[in-house]
Image (tube, rainbow, N blue to C red; front, side, top):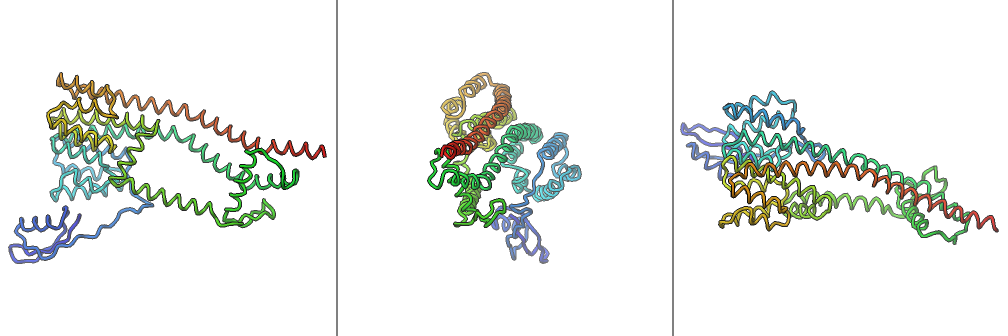
Length: 425
């Protein structure tokens, strides 16, 4: 938080400025420590750099380049402030340049790099900030930044695979939904009139045909459009716009649910739900285990103690349910148990993780054993997503074909039967 202050210095002059800290009391303490007598301290009103509709983002590739460059400069012994200032001109992202200006000022004012990064959550997420904090505390900031760059690249590759796998079925699904409602609004009303002309108002239709006709009537009567020329004299506004109302309610509900998942309790519920969805559960678990293995081994190899390493690793996993399990495991480790023991009782960590941990503990090579687990599970995720991509396409084609067949049978079957009845009469 930023605070504006006015104070009297040791020469009796009134001075002013801006300080970034956690609370007003901290500002007062800082001023008194510097020998100033505070007159006025007010919190500065925050100006949002982005709205909900146009949030500023930084490309993952730009973040990867920044992490690698900062790692190189820190490992070469360049002071942190000078490194940040130099990288401001190297980045191609205007918003990242703006962020780095703020980060540089924060570090100059005495904040840690992790605290400075935490002010820009749209650029540096919780995992990034937690890892940087661990690097600063363990004196391994350059190594952590390299691993962060590697992890961001892996995440970007994973996102691309997921996006590519879901692009085709998403397009097919959208086209199918548009086509279905187009049929319900424009074609089925005319066909239902044809049913009446051929078989009379009491014409008997198969159950699936009746369902489609009734749903079509509901869609037509719930539309906000009064007339469509293609339908001639068939009015489309015979009742209140129920579909619009339902859509608005669903939209508001989704927004509320999304905001709730950003709160600690909501995030815990959401992450627990992800671990119950069959296919999603497997992907989330494998990613979490890979992150745990890679992060924990990095911290242990850098001399960070087990309890601190578990705390940081839990925050870096990205799933609150598993993070809580690691917090509980840390308590048992504090009581004198080996980490492999509580991990073996976990509902989400497979047996191979506890077994490899046990081997690492016995041989003193945790930092060597765990990266192999990370490599294994990252490869498993990649293979799983590739497999899903190859399975989703034929499944979508089957469902689409079944839907088209059902609509065709619902329309052509009754027409053929009613035509026979009319011909016999």
